[in-house]
Length: 80
Image 1 (cartoon, rainbow, N blue to C red):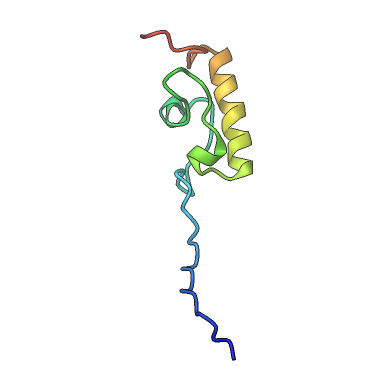
Image 2 (image 1 turned 90 degrees about the horizontal axis):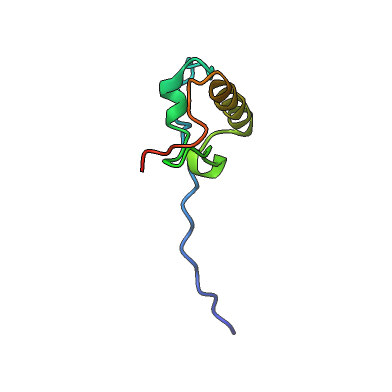
């Protein structure tokens, strides 16, 4: 008769909290918040890295692009 080897149970995956607080609005005027989601080169960080939901990521992308057009954020970071 075969004996089955019991495997250790995986711990349940906990949802990671999003970095945006519940009352915080994603707005093109909130430059401090938008800078957290832009890389050093000025690129918009991916949803996987920022841990945003799809809806939040779309809103963040629109806000960053609007802020760039209004010259609140740079298109490219040339500080190097």
